[in-house]
Length: 354
Image 1 (cartoon, rainbow, N blue to C red):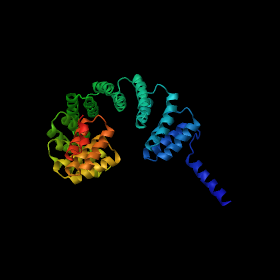
Image 2: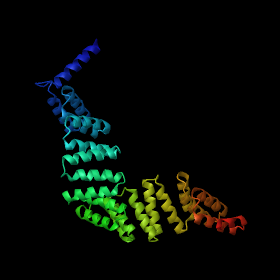
Image 3: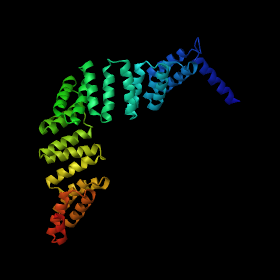
Image 4: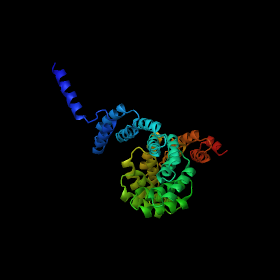
């Protein structure tokens, strides 16, 4: 009996709190949802949006706003479901397609995102952000040339947005158009000199163009702006290695590994730097780490070189043999293995020269 009375009190209080001059007016519940959304009470907002669409199943704004609340809570598929319904009810609203495209891209459905951006652009030709978003989806799908065309269009419409130049510069870099990439990244820095990503990408362009010192300067600037990105230290370390600054390279690779101990590229590059410094034991430890998780022809050849320098010739032969198994066309591996065989006066090693 106590439970029944308590339940009645709760229901009465709930009905009182939700009371309005027109209790069945869906707009009232939508507005209440909007209020809670602005206050950051997303679950409560969704509760009222639910009521709004219950009272009016064709209430487009309620579906759209519930999508926003669900998205803000990380319920991305639920947000897509709401936007699907909003688009059914209002198929001429470019913003709905754009919002769904953004979420689809985040869900790794880039083709679906492109379809939504296509429709949104069809309805609103002069929105630079739509071309930018479609360009990013094309970029993620590997279609860099079409992505660049969309970045071009975005820049034509809005020529003072740094991120458009940054992304176009990235795409230019990745298709080997380094001078064009440099132009775009220079412009991006003019427009926004506080974005670490732009310095990072310009550093990579300078690296490819052979300007290693300029690359280091850009990576220095990127590190100041974002000291938690391990890739910046990694690439600065690579630039130091190319300039034979092997000790500085090791320092950078150490930091990269401390931030992200799972990236094998960092260990591989530090191994090479240790090898150049003559620290063979440290180099061996790093290459062992790489081989344990991702054995490749290159990693076995590197370990063979280290073992040979350490005087472990038989182990070096074994590593070259494993490298050859992974790549039977690696002539260098045959040659180096044969040299060791001959040093050990193993006549059967001569066959590697043939």
